Image (tube, rainbow, N blue to C red; front, side, top):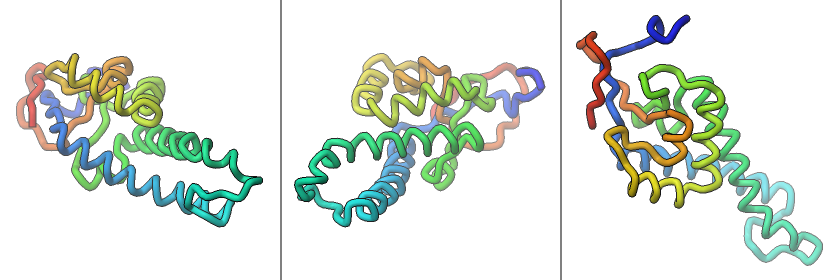
Length: 161
């Protein structure tokens, strides 16, 4: 299927920053619960008061959670365009034409969210454009869109929600 054949709509409705934050927060809670469960199952504690033989685990807890976030976002956004948070808020990750993004694009976008989210968001706000992209969205040519039925079939127009 070519790019012109797979276009769902002529309008790409850009999601609000607040909706994106709420979707991220839902995802954060989901992954944090999973990460905490894994840490508890492996080490028998969720606190930072590890026994001496598990002191190395304190520094790896952030890495484990970030890797889980990266895997979660990559798989769900590549396969469905939506994470649990995005599905609840009716958002979707797309390419800049409103189509399904490539795996490479999703990997780039997910990396920014999983490992560098504060820097990614702040630079995205500073250098924002009409597409409301984080820096890693720009690098991967991805958008977070609001799912709505568009009636106009002319050229693509970007509309802020």
